[in-house]
Amino acid sequence: MPEAFEIYFNFLNFLFGTAWLWLPIILAVVFFQSWMYYIQRFHWAGLDWILLEVKPPKEIESSPKNMEQIFAGLWGAYGTVGYKYEKYIKGISQDYFSFELVGINGEAHFYLRLQKKFRNLVEAQIYSQYPQAEIREVEDYVWKVPADLPNKNWNLWGCRLAMTAPGPYRSAYPIRTYVDLMDVNKTDEPFFDPLAGLMEVFGKLRQGEQVWLQILFRPTGDGWQKKSRAVADKLLGKKEKPKPETLFALDRRTWAESVYDVGYEMVTGKLAPERNKKDKKDEPPSLAMHLSPGEKSIIEAIEMKANKKGFESKINFVYIGRSNVFTMANVSATMGIIAQFANLNMNSLKPDGKMTTKAYYFFAKARKAFKQRTLMRMMRTRSFWEPGDILNIEELATLFHFPTVGVKSPMTPYMDTRKGGPPVDLPLE
Image (cartoon, rainbow, N blue to C red; front, side, top):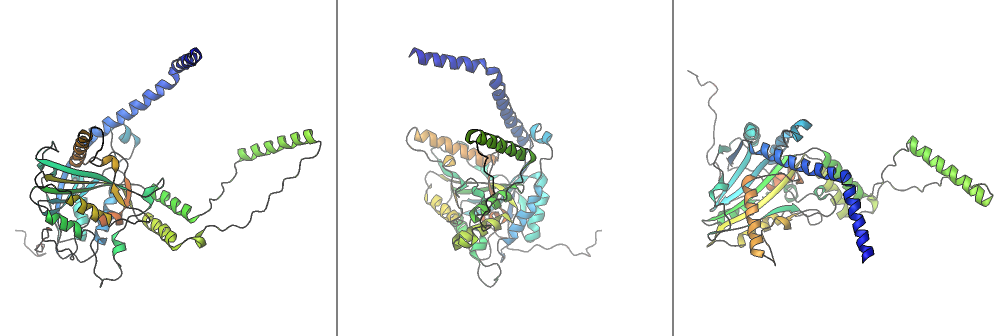
């Protein structure tokens, strides 16, 4: 025991004696993280946000391809941070958007939350694909429910949806998109709208029930595409090209061989054997010939996803209802609709356990209430600080688009009349 105490005492002496080495590093890291936390939120609090509601035209006969072009246009917002000074001193971060599918008391709504400076950009992109749509600024719906949820009159269930693919880079694998549900080259075939079921769920909500599905996304660079192609190359079994040997490495290897040869001669009294480079057997550049059809389809899907622009994304879902009408059946129905976007051998969306409003065992009720209020605060602020999963424009268009003509839900808000511009020869005076 005294010996163990002495070892422990010596360790403490060493630890505190060298504090001048490691303590400044720890304090610098803590200061940097605290500084970035403060300045980013200070800058974010000063941003001017607005909420737009879109009422799409009723005769949309095309696929979500139109919405894909809108997301491609919004990628132009990439590059908000131009200098290190803006990022580390002013706290400026990449701008983002929130496109939201909301059902309130049996009515469906399409909301777009964005900074006011992007209003012209967003409206121009929507009108370019849906000229007959109506866009207007509205009051934010998130402030029309009590802030102290849950309480005796209201309850909620919610979660954040995350990708489920295995491996270090799960965003490389795509989810199921609208392209998988139709043949875009055959216009005579009916298109199965993946959001038709969601519109029906919205239409079945009773008074006092609400479903919020918020898709937050910000444009990102092309680094994710290189990572995705690296995943595809690994699955394909491609051999990495050997890097050319540097002059320093060549010199080091020569010296090592010379020392070995001298030592061998001194010990054995014989000359060191000559080094003959063995001829490498011809190896195939990849394992493509040995892959199964399923493995080939996975590689092809990864490469197809990487061919389109991508966004860091975060998806939040919450169901809110008065206590007398609250039912988990609406949660099950919504999650079932989200499950149709699953590619079982590639990727899917499921609730993130850390951000799901459920708790078990110790202090379960208090922990669950804390999660519910945390998620409700996130839904209200639409904050986006953490890294998100990568969704390309095709995947985003699948998750958020305006219902096509095949959607017959009576509570879907369509524009029943056409808007026309004034005659070109209309006198100004």
